[in-house]
Amino acid sequence: MTGMNFILRVLATGLALWLCDLIFDSVEIFPTDDVLGYILSLAGVAVVFSLVSMVVKPIVTILSIPLLILTLGLFYLLINAFMLWLTTWLTSQDWLGDWGMTIDGGFWWYLWVALILAVLQALVGLVVPNGDRD
Image (cartoon, rainbow, N blue to C red; front, side, top):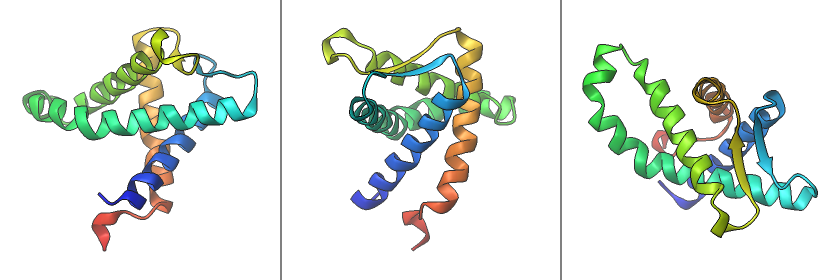
């Protein structure tokens, strides 16, 4: 993955996360008091989510191949929800400062947000060029 492709994917993820923040009341990207802080926090969460998806997600996917086959791919939604939970956990640590993302409401909200986030990333990904299609 080239550097420009990574930046475009982070922008697409940031746009999808922003839309999820607008759609769901349980999703909060903070700080919300100033616009610049919100944009920087959104960019930071998008970078963390992209890095988690690049590093952790392939490992979890390979380890869960039997479950993916057994559920005909539906387990992939749980993997996406876990990546989202990991991102919220990483970005809401106290030692990182006052920025990050939270999802209130438990497991089912993570599933809903992961589903909507996957759909929005796919839609935004249609516009963003993929480095594999060169």
